[in-house]
Structure formats: C-alpha cells, structure tokens
Length: 268
Image 1 (cartoon, helix red, strand yellow):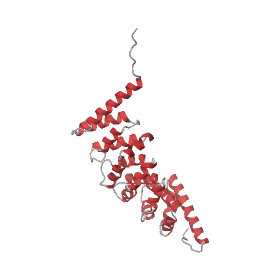
Image 2 (image 1 turned 180 degrees about the vertical axis):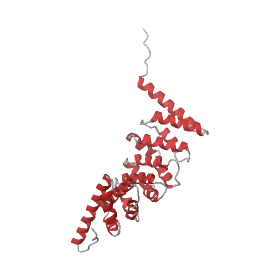
Image 3 (image 1 turned 120 degrees about the vertical axis):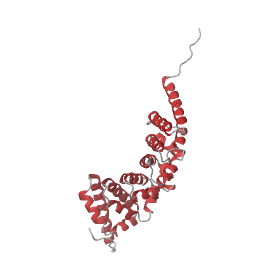
Image 4 (image 1 turned 30 degrees about the vertical axis):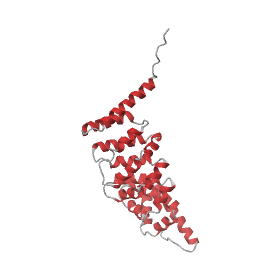
C-alpha cells in the first residue's frame, strides 16, 4: 500500500507564505511609483510587525529610510517597529543601519526625523549598536538636535537616546568629554518643555556620577541652583525627583570642597 505524501506543518506553510509575501512587497517597494512603493511598505509593515526580520528586508529598508518622502517615513517607521524585538537589534547592526540613522539625524530635518530618532532609541539599547552609534558621532549629532529650535518633540527624543547611550561606558564617556555639555543641559532646563527638562536632569545626574569636572562646571554657573530649585518645586513629579537628587549631589560636592579647604559653591 502506497504511503500518502507528508504535508508540511501548518506553521511551515505559514512561514513560506509570509516569506513569499515579504519578497513580493520588497519587489513592489522598488517601484518608481510613489503610490505603489508606499502601499508595498504599508503591507510589509503589517506583515512584519513585531516579527523577526531578515537581512534582505533590512538592507532594502536601508535604501529608503533617508528618502525625504512619505516612503522614507514609512520605511523608518517600519525599522522602529522591527527594532522593538530584541532579536532584531543585532541584525540592524550587522546591516549597518546604525550608521545610516546617525547620518540621517546629522543632516537636514526631514518628515521622517521623529521615526529615525525613535528607531535609533530602540536599536542603541543593544550594547553593540551603542558602540557603533558613539563611534559614528551620534552624541554630537543628537546634541545638535537638542540645541536646535526645529521642535521640542525631536529634542525630547534626542535626550532619550543620549540617556540610553549613557547607560554604557562608551556613551557616558563621550558625553562627559563633550565641550560645554553641562551648559547645553542647563539651556534645556531653561526651556518650556517639562519632558525635556526631565531628560536634561537625568543626563546631568549621570554626568555628575561620571565626572567631577561636570560637577565643578555646574557649580560655577550662577543660575544653576535657582533653576534646579525651581524645578524641584514646580516641575512634574519625575522632574522634581531628578531635581532633588541633583540638589543633594551639589550639596554633597559643596560639603566635600569645604572639607578640603577649597569651597566651590556657597549658594545653597
């Protein structure tokens, strides 16, 4: 009696169909028609949302994310969605997506700027990607966005990425060695956006733990104490918490300087 041919498992069939659909979308995404390209990217986003990405898909997205078009915006949004899955983060590093994202934020602001920053925020949570980002100049590029007047929302996301970079030694070292880094964060504290103030205060706390030089720089700024005191009273709950920690660090540093016979600060 003949044996009936084995049928592929349902999961395997599903995987085959998904890969075929992805390949079809990638092919259509290369169309000269913006409408066809955008539709293909939208379909690709729905297929690959929170799923494992293959290098072919990532390489193709790399060719689109910097485009100053709606397609570039969709591609960078898709990168962000795929980057949320930890297993995809290293693949983006291998595909050199980090370099492209840093280059994109270093240039003129396009419609995809927020998605590009959000993608970078997801990817630098992986240590290897953080190392690449710092080496490619992410710190000065992000600080340039923070200091620009293009939009407070972009500044807030940039501060988030800087704080994520500072979780690792190379990121924190690059920040602490940046000229006028304390003054830059103080300018953010003077701004109107409370979310950005929270981000700046978080970075200052990390910098103070890393570098006594940053503490001394802050102590020399005449308006620093009043800014921190104001935030500790009128800021959001998170901002008040960060401001209180900053005040404590400053007072501890001041007491240590008095003990050494070289007082740095006497405004508290």
